[in-house]
Amino acid sequence: MKKTIFTLFLASFFAFVSQAQQINNGVMNLNEFSRPNKRSNIVIPDVNGFKVLKCDFHMHTVFSDGDVWPTVRVQEAWREGLDAIAITDHMEYTPKKDDITPNNNRPYEIAKPSAQRQGITLVKGTEVTRQTPPGHFNALFIGDTDDYLTVNTNETDREAVMKAEAQNAFIFWNHPGWQPGIAGSYEWLPFIEDLYKNKALDGIEVVNGTGFHMKALDWCIDKNLTVMGSTDVHNLISLSYDNSRDYVHRTMTLVLVRDNTPESVREALDARRTVAWASKYLMGKEENVRSLFNACVEVLPSHHSETNREGKTIKYYQIRNNSDLYFEMERTAGNGPGRIVLYPQSSQVIAAESGQPVYSVVTTYVRSDKHLSVNLLLP
Ligand SMILES: [Zn+2]
Ligand SMILES: [Zn+2]
Picture (spheres, rainbow, N blue to C red):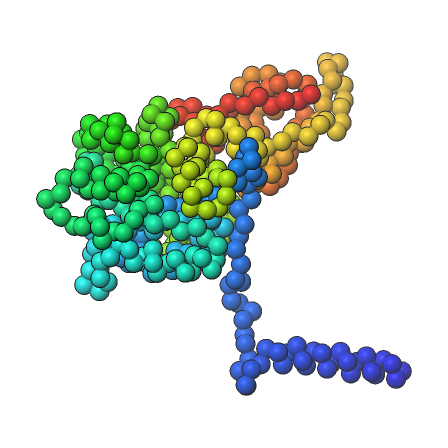
């Protein structure tokens, strides 16, 4: 009895203490409804020994026509599981200039300490903003913006882009199809051909926010340019993407890197090792999309077999998606289920005869009119 009373005393003592821990100088902390301070990890296995970084290299802040302060971009990226970002404000379009002094070095400088603390790789960038055509270009890994891109109305489009090239920037053509109503704007323009021939064009933004600029994917494939996907976000990410729903992520570029360092990101972008990820779709060079698929999807050895009414041996296999990506597959040859949906980090059991059925992964694009085709090995 004594022991029970003592235990009760202890229990109530600890209950009081734990409650007391929430009270500081007469103020009780009511944090039950606060949003937890946590990062959502996006799981993608390594691909051929490369880590898969989740990157968004096209975002705006109040330093041009965006609505947020630079550090907010870092906080959003950290929460969403991104690894590397760039703030790319318009140099030539600064509608908030009466309240915010235009200076394209500042978004990077302001965001940098926050990025360092959170372990986010911050790449310095800007958006070279010209009339359409030719439109807008993102320059990453730029130097001092005071040295170039000064707003000079006499400057030609070519001079503006070439200033970034002179700083050895990584340059990609943004949202080429954003104003398709302007005749000739969504074409491989002589201006673009000139940049390309002079090695001043490294990639194209194939996905801009929720727009898949399909012709741009073919240009990237045919001319060996880097496939980019980015948000071009101006407001809060949470106002543009419904992160409260499962599997919803912002548009991003998956970059296959040796390390999460600016140097490795640059090397991977130059080497064209990227896949754009937007909604449930993956867009990229076939070899990159195939390597990514192979790293994420595996078929386990058959765990059961039966003889069906026609006397054929039907085996049961578990097919697993070890990633947070999403794959829908439709059979185009051989035996097996007509359609397989692989939800993020999940498995399916399929029944099939042994063989190598061919599937079209319809949530991938390796050209504007072509999905990745894979052989499922069913031993
Ligand atoms: Zn733009
Ligand atoms: Zn933009």
